Length: 301
Image (cartoon, rainbow, N blue to C red; front, top):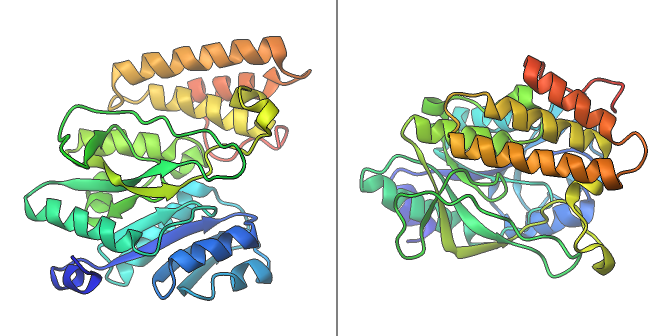
């Protein structure tokens, strides 16, 4: 199905991205994949003019914030603005995503076909693969029982990057958790969507390069991410795992597995981390238990 045919069937799709200190070279590569397409970009704090100029090939709608209000709030603004302009689906991207030129059309076609069969589709996402450079780790998907046919598999949740999100689902499920600020937002929303009857699916035949985590040297390939992340990233990770595990719509199997994994990673950090590296994690655990969310305390930044 072509983009024109998709729009004739009632779907209007666009792309959205949240920018925070982006790399202009990577933005330029993203813009090539979105050439001529409507792109809603939320500048989460100041973004230099050269980086914004890299988005010139797109039909850009820029929304600016003077300060960093978090990824969750940025995603919500993108979704709300797209809805106000009459779009029905938004392909959300990380700022370093490199979507192929036909990805938006193909995801929209796949989603529209499922919707016409009566399926309540929250997300249809491409299969994310590491880029050739940088020794990035592959994504580990959380598979789910359900519709699993050729080229389509059910997921507990889909990573934000490349996910085509239905605005009908967004309205029914509710906004992303902006109080999570950055980590685990897609996880919580995916479980909430399933709880309200809206599914997330992976189009296994559609591929997009994705930089998961941080690039490492060949010598550091086996080094766990918790030993490579900045202290503030470990704070958000620990806090939001606990905050998510406390929610009633999150399955017990995920709570147990994620909390055990977190405990193992904290053990690694205690044994091999630099001095003081446990302090942000302890603070994150305490805040997660207390339900104290939002931006990290200034002492951790």
